[in-house]
Amino acid sequence: MQTKKYSSYAQIDNELEILKIEKEISYQKLVLSVQQTKESLSFLNISINVLDTVKSTLFSSYSSVLRFLIPIIIKWIKNKRRGN
View 1: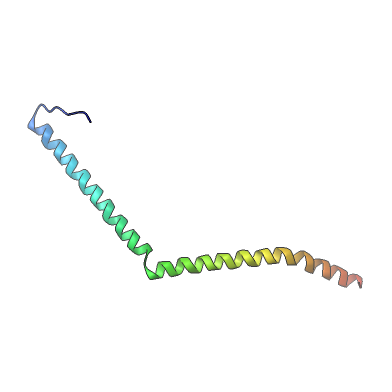
View 2: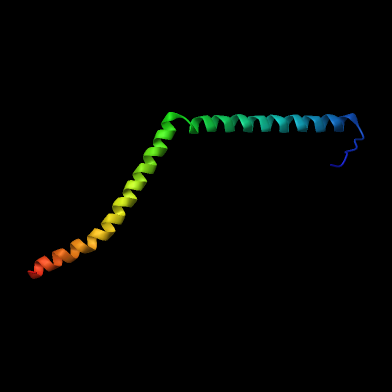
């Protein structure tokens, strides 16, 4: 890192103020991140995520079964109409 050269105390004060604000922003980002992590680990959110996963798994299983059974059922109905 290159050393900065300042020509006045005002420049140093400005740089220190900028660094102070950047530090506060970083701290607030950290606080927000911790809050979001706490919320995502709450019992309610975990329960909702588990239920969503179970629901999507069940629906994908049902859709696979239906994709297999529907053509068979249609063929059976057509054959039934013909009297076979």
